[in-house]
Length: 159
Image (cartoon, rainbow, N blue to C red; front, side, top):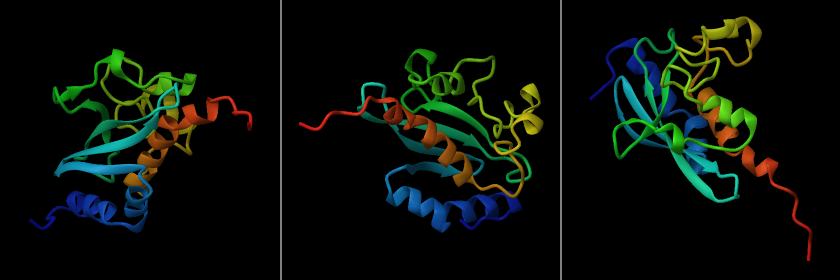
């Protein structure tokens, strides 16, 4: 079915963009399901022990792109927000981003609910949502956080 509203058209444009397809090709993320206004994306991660994994994120996209997405770290099996005990661990930035904070959203300036919190549009304008941003902006930010544990790993000595 063809996209009919401006929001649906914007989401479709983002999902077919070269930037989105490049992230898929590199194994950074993948579309799990999409029926407007709900998009579920799997994003590659590196756990603190160095193993690879994947986390899922549910994007509620009503009003997109004028309104930023409402992004929840998602449990595909239970079809609800991922239990806090199963959320990504690692660096302080990772823990802070995926903490339980009173809303089930990812705690980042671009999120619809988290963004207005702490006046982030003024304190972190480079991460705040604006209508010119694309979904790959968010996907890249989350992927960077989820793979930052790699950077925290000690460098191995050559043998």
